Length: 216
Image (tube, rainbow, N blue to C red):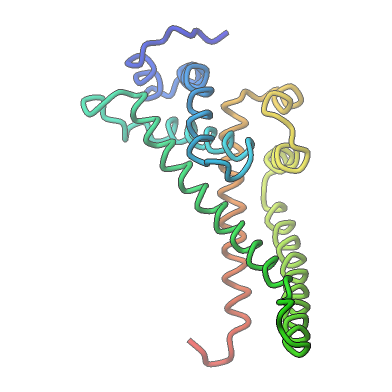
């Protein structure tokens, strides 16, 4: 059982020494507060799962980058809060861009009732083109995601499937796998980074393949 009375200086020393118990104690002390703070920053954008993922990313960052914390400049709590702010605002911008793209597509589906018949026909044709492009894009992205998932180790692929396709909680995954929360969060963080890098590389290759010969 993780002790819950670690002072911040002991937490800091434990993280620097790479003691898993220190990370577990850090999560136990700050997870609820940090997750609530992140949900406030997301301000209705995204879901509770987005807030939880941001909190998970924060604790992985604290584990991997604790040397960036300088006690003389402030408390560990303040450092965590500022890191959480950057992570949450970055996620919020990503979610807003995604929602804006969906809203833009939905807006094109609205035909101006005061326009003439030809205007309506043109907009309908444009909408059909966009819908078809969207369907093709979704199919391409699904195939790219499937290919990217195959690059993950079996355990990481299983964790991604359980967390993001079955929407299982960290506690449920821990029960099924025997992994600690820290191990699950770290593996999911690495898996997300690997998938993101793989998808970006596939997108780059696809765009490059579409360029005309001789085009820079």
